[in-house]
Amino acid sequence: MKNLSGSWIFLLLSTGFAFSLESVLERSYRYNIYPASWADAQDICRRYHTDLATVYSKADVQYQNLGRYYAWIGLDGDRSKWSDLVLSNGKGYFLDSLENQTFAHSAECIAASYHVWYYNSELLINRIYGLNCGSDFFFICQDNPQHNGQGHHGKEYIFIPEAKSWSEAQQYCNENHEELANIDGSDLDNNVHNEDFPIWIGLRRDSGSWNWTESPSEYKSWEINEPSSNGDCVSMSSETFNMAAQNCDKQFPFLCVSDNVVLVKENRSWEEALEHCRGLGSSSHSDLRYDLLSLQPGEEHAYMVRKVLEADTEEVWTGLRFLAGDWLWVNGADMLYTDLPSCPTPGQHCGSLSKDETVGVKTRDCLERKNFLCYGYKHP
Ligand SMILES: *[C@@H]1O[C@H](CO)[C@@H](O)[C@H](O)[C@H]1NC(C)=O
Ligand SMILES: *[C@@H]1O[C@H](CO)[C@@H](O)[C@H](O)[C@H]1NC(C)=O
Ligand SMILES: *[C@@H]1O[C@H](CO)[C@@H](O)[C@H](O)[C@H]1NC(C)=O
Image (cartoon, rainbow, N blue to C red; front, side, top):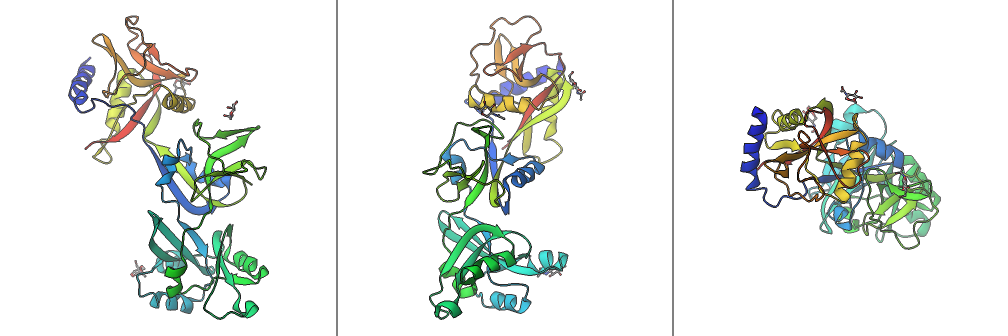
């Protein structure tokens, strides 16, 4: 019981500053500006231990800086035009990934792309990127001056939020008597403004019902006249955050989400699990610590059960413990479960979450061996 008394002391010390600790779940969104089909977007998110985003409220997405995108403009691999653009900037435009990344690693055609970044509705940074011509990005057409008789001035730019390769984009513009936008340094400031475009999220029609793929959420915010019959995958507007049904093969930028919860698929007793979680942080970032997970009833409970489905064992350990006559979370979080036995069967002093338990937690013998859930947090 040596380790346990150690954790008991930790508990006493930590309850001071964890006095009103409720949820320890932290979710973070990551916006990927490279367009992909819905399924590829999900694959890419999962490759980085995240998933296509579940949204719980508008506040989740409102501050995610979703105005960024790449868009082809009319500069192809002719480097002399590139250097004109760079030299004419005089205003701090960057020519990114041109020299060392794209050019160095690929002998393919190089096109310009155009990167806009909004912050608090204000244009913050404008960059020119060298990118592989074969990649699919949005693009910007402009009126063809030969066709409409207009001179260089009064150009009209048309943003097309469909991902195409550079030459497909050029072809698309040409078919509409336009050409890919011939933007130079001075145009950049004047013609850049917020554009509305779709962003994939993790909502999808699944045998008739719209389901979030990563975790359950009741949140839906359809655009007027949506969901339409356009397709089975759902995008969110970069401006209004309203949702629309789309053909799943379309390519859009996408939003991934990850959280601070780790399912450890090792079979350990409760105390070993506690020790394992607390040992996780020590080798990496010194300010990142881990503990056995505490949880709260309701949406968060449902969210965690979804994680438990991935476990090797029917139940997983949580940080729930019966000590000195009370059920507590070992991290000092508030106890909001009300149906725990006040006089648990001897030995059944540890709490687990099971795959089939939709509302409560189970009390179990602490020596049983189960997978377990740890969570990470920043230690000040
Ligand atoms: C590209 O990389 C080389 C070697 O690392 C470096 O010397 C050079 O300055 C880089 N060029 C640019 C434009 O960053
Ligand atoms: C999708 O949602 C419906 C209704 O809530 C549910 O019956 C169905 O099991 C869900 N499908 C998946 C794969 O979660
Ligand atoms: C843990 O236990 C489960 C159920 O008994 C078993 O299926 C699984 O293979 C075990 N995992 C390890 C890593 O031993």
